[in-house]
Image (cartoon, rainbow, N blue to C red; front, side, top):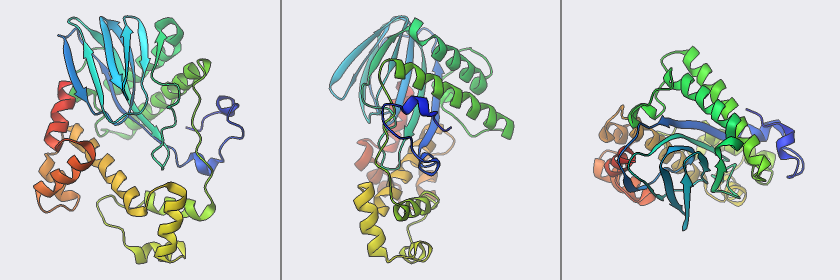
Amino acid sequence: MVIPNKLNEREGPSKTPEQWDFLSKRLLWIYRTKSGGNFHNISRPGCQSAILVLKGYFEVTIKGKTVRTEKNEWLITPHCSTRIQSAPDGYAFLSVGWEAKWPTHHPLLDEGLPMVLPRKEGAELEEATENLYRAVHGSLQPVSWTTAIIQPHESLEQLLEEEVAFAKWFLALLQVLKIRGVLPHLPPELDDRTMDILACLRHHPVTENIQPKVIEQRIGLSWRRIHDLFKKNMGMTPHEYLNQRRLEEVSKRLLSGLEPPKAIAYSMGFNHLSHFSAWFKKYYGVSPRQYILEHENA
């Protein structure tokens, strides 16, 4: 989805069409709870969420800041790796989890968040959320957390309907936030060579290691020049960029519940589950199995 120029009028010139193509965005879950018992836990979403509290309240601590959202209020969170959250007996809420970030892993929306909005100010966002919920789950009935996580699509029609609904939802979110002064973050423009390297790495299979000679032939530069140019403009090396993509792919597959950690580990080139677990824990702070349990309990 290309974001209309009117949303960016305070940032100066819009990005070129080629640069907008590098914006990565995806729906991770959409969840409507039944009235539940109280909870207090640590969650590692690694993404952003929009939560409409329907009953009770929802309290969350993100980056040292605690925000309490009451009944009939929206909470829009920043991108975070860890958050402490709690709710009382009888709570109920509608929640959407998503990612929208640049290849540098800077989120499109961050400054000015977290933010709490009255429900009436987010009327269009609520309507778009319900439409997205229907597109994903077929009705507005509550679903389990496992069902709430976006799964592989059964048909092309389902995929397209969900993508259209998510694009409309995201546009509604941007418009609501713009009224409150929260605008998209636009990173510095990249030169053509860096964009070529980035395009090459974006299409590199996450299950395979980088082959410098292959990248050299495609880009027409030495590997040392590619490495230095990419790190200068992206703030990370090509290997670090691929590692980030691998982590994102692994976390998504772990939460889908369709494969055991052992199968995911082998598909990613790990011959020993212990090595896979150590690699994952280095970045997420918990083992793959603990990561799954935390999200199920959340």
